[in-house]
Length: 312
Image (cartoon, rainbow, N blue to C red; front, top):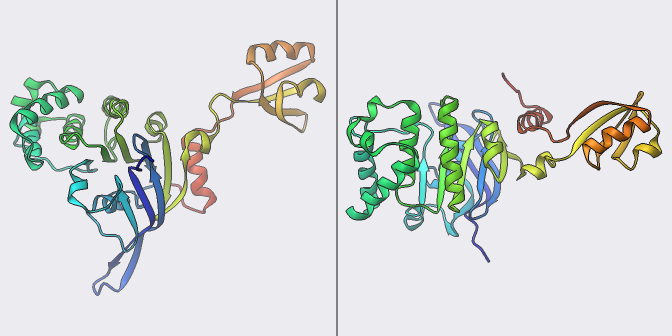
């Protein structure tokens, strides 16, 4: 039986605030989820939803006030497990007077990697993240763009060749090119079979990358599942037709209903053949669109259904 990469049971975190620490803020509550090995898992939610708290709790940076969790089959916080994990924080701090090569050497030293292994590993990672070795050796990171720094951050998160990688808002603050570059790096890690757990509010990127997602709001998980489970199939058409008889349309449209003077249903056959058949039915095609909602539409609907404010 394969060991799950991440498992949580009713995980919760409550902070005490105020001058006398007599006020409580619930950042995470009743959080239960499972992430399979080799899976790319996206945690979505508005700002302040508790995404970073969950991630830091899993990493052992923050201690939970209730519940429990395991990483790679072991309780969170174990040093031996941390050696098998990579982490990119949302706002990483770099010693910007160093070059990227020097910084990655420093990161390799934290894991006590031998020099011959760290040198080979750094070269591989610089190639993976698209930073030329010459640039990485000579240019101080204070002269790097946001996208370049994010790629250096990804490289340090992978220096120990981790089985499980945590990325906190890896697309945050990047321009379209930077987002594309980071997305391609994540996809390459996915092909290597690594387990990737990342927080994001860039929904279009999540839709292209993730095997499964969860939506978190006010510290609680609203829903969890694959995109097909949550959004529906991506190859099903929603059709609206004017005219025609029910018995003629039934062989072509599932879930057939009539509203006002229009027929609504999901297309069963091929679209070109259906459009040709409409002529013999003396019917008119009004619309033909994919029935699957976008992740953004689904995300907004989940928040609104629970009375949560959606700001633009």
